[in-house]
Image 1 (cartoon, rainbow, N blue to C red):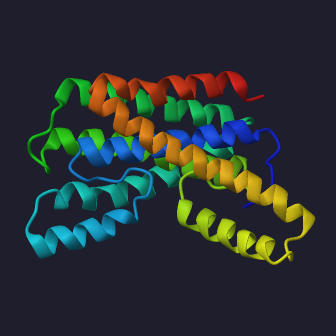
Image 2: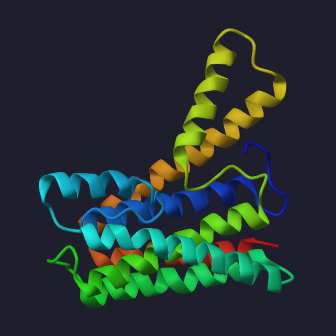
Length: 219
């Protein structure tokens, strides 16, 4: 989790985390509380919807099969390709672009379980599933870019060891790497909220452009 992955610089890893944070915030705000990257967070929201009688139950339930099927397809596609990282990133780019255009065309979404919202949410979830799968398949030694709970836990353990002088030299590098990824994700969350507030759905083009930039950065 904490080492630098061959072919993926720390800057690019932090940018991937920023994209995930951006998309997660954008879907939560624009799609009635759907998480696209942290799909397990939808379990809590499903429970809240059942308890409080709020909408969005079908859309949140749909995230799980969409995510699982997308990861399975990602694995099968990666086996067929000689350089899977670039092609998986391209697949993610297509899905993100479709999510952006769908949100611009169908939004704002008044009904939490409308077919249009479920379609747009599924595109965002599929894009984040491809990113999750790409990290595990192409860059298994890299810091995770979508699951921040484990990153935060590891960073706090290293911080605690550093405070008492028991952090090994390699631990400082690990703490720096994880810290930058956490900052990237947090920055992406802030950017997603700002884009929707100040620009609206058109602002969702930013993660699309960031993914294009990453395509030129990958070897």
